[in-house]
Image 1: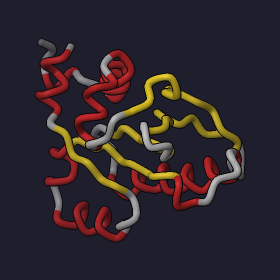
Image 2 (image 1 turned 90 degrees about the horizontal axis):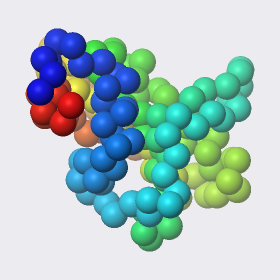
Image 3 (image 1 turned 180 degrees about the horizontal axis):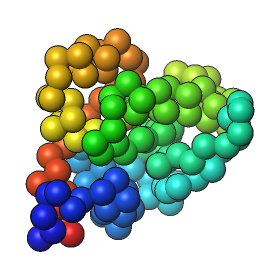
Length: 139
């Protein structure tokens, strides 16, 4: 088990790539594993951005997922919001078919009441909190 202090965002993304069932459990869906892409680049204005994860569930809904660790919630929540719109455009989908998800460590969210308020303002983005210690157990 790695120490909680040594865990980085890359560690969390690696765990989710190796064990997508963790992401399935957190989001509460059954993923079509053949559609899972990690670190997928898309063109946005301006420039390009790297999606942490994108996939479809078994019902055909698309998901764009941002993994955040020790990142300001307001900065983290804007990524899946942008990705949702762009993913829908690229794949010629209705925007309602793309579900934006932010998976963020609960320590960051709970450090300030403002953090919770910022996340609540983006009610259309599904926000899921995880414990860093749980991820450390997986390493």
